[in-house]
Length: 164
Image (cartoon, rainbow, N blue to C red; front, side, top):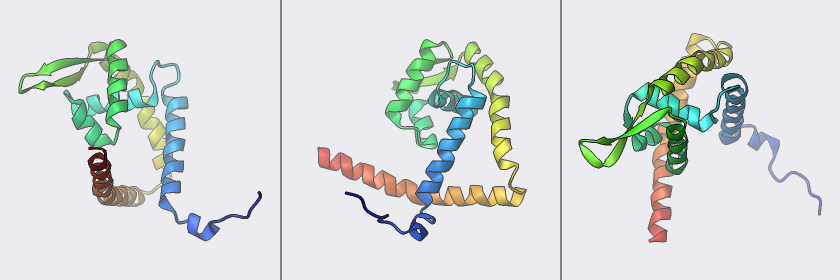
């Protein structure tokens, strides 16, 4: 059965999630194509490697909480990075149940090789905005993330409660 569009275009044009997904997908394609070309890393592995470089030695839970990386996907990426020799996990002396993730010398080398290309790829996008526009975009994204975070957390808790 054929049918016409069910959602009027004026409703879709303002639907922020479509714009956010489109932007995120395009940036991930740019990162895959221009930044990670020739590297033995997935976008998720790069995000995790970058996060350890950004935050320093830390727990995976800390990274996933601050970066919105799904914990299960983050764990698999960490395992892959560890097998490649780019990160190492060590016991946290303050909390034996947790491991601290650190870059190895090989991980630092890979990060230092990729980081300039990553910065340039992002600059190729953000240079089309004025400094004020970029600051306003970041402010608005932070505002939306601050609102969406508790809503997503509440929904996750609700799902967990119904499974128990």
